[in-house]
Length: 246
Ligand SMILES: [Zn+2]
View 1 (cartoon, helix red, strand yellow):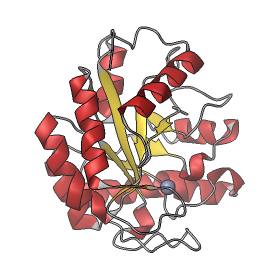
View 2 (cartoon, rainbow, N blue to C red):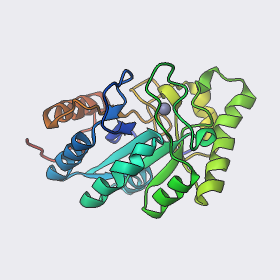
View 3 (tube, rainbow, N blue to C red):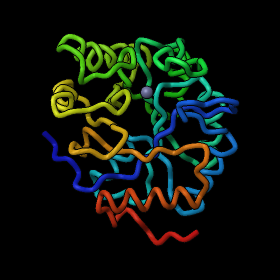
């Protein structure tokens, strides 16, 4: 039953990295901005890593300089823009892919501009680069609202499908829409995931509902610092913060 960490690590949440003209769901960060944000981390002695690395290091009482970098939905633009920047700084990341929509689009966003999702070949190439692949479910639905067989499909079958695609264990889950409750957390644990990412802080803050910091296209260094401080205050985590000055 592994105890949840009493202090939550700092984890950034991204979706799409691309140039854009409209972005009604505020899920897109321009490549230049993303690169500036990674540079900001590097300049402050921080290193962006996958969730797996972040949690492994923290289990050993290490990794106070690490920041989790997560990318939800598996947009194809990740492949176009992100690995090059991560490689420049020696960073890694976690991509939460939607197992039943590989090679498809973000159909669940009613109005939004359609964005292509990575396919199986893209995911295998990311694994070869050291990027972790986690599961974002089968179809991008609200898991707590599902009947038991639907939950099983989203949690277990999505993982099996992704593992068969990348031929590597999948140990992380990410709740679509950040939608989580106690029952769903129990299901995630029973499905033998090692961790799960939520979006905001909640009563379920733990290794199985890790809150993340939304990072958007307007987030310059100053705003990132404010967000990091808010995160620290909410989690009571002071050990994470080496002396950082802009
Ligand atoms: Zn999503």
